[in-house]
Image 1 (cartoon, rainbow, N blue to C red):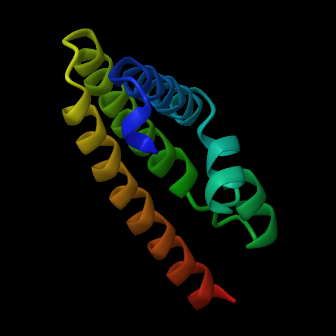
Image 2: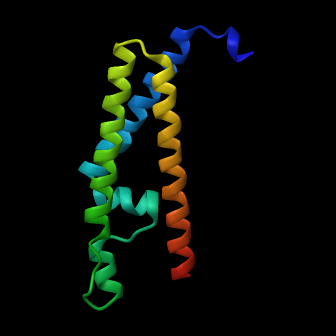
Length: 116
């Protein structure tokens, strides 16, 4: 069934994934506290300071922009592969990024399990 789909369709789907990565990356860079709270459940430094008596965490200020830059790099890689019409390579990068996603999810679940 998947073999009936044209290679250009797969490339366009890969380009859509690149746009998604770029959007996630920019949101993590431009709005780190909101991204950290919505994606990772990390409270912002001001909220953490209120609840912990003045000792706030800067994890949101550090983690989200780093992951945002990683997502932008992957989006740029996918865009370059799209431009060069390298569909198989685009698929490889997307699968590799999925492994990053699984690792992020496992790490977050482990950290939340330790806190709760």
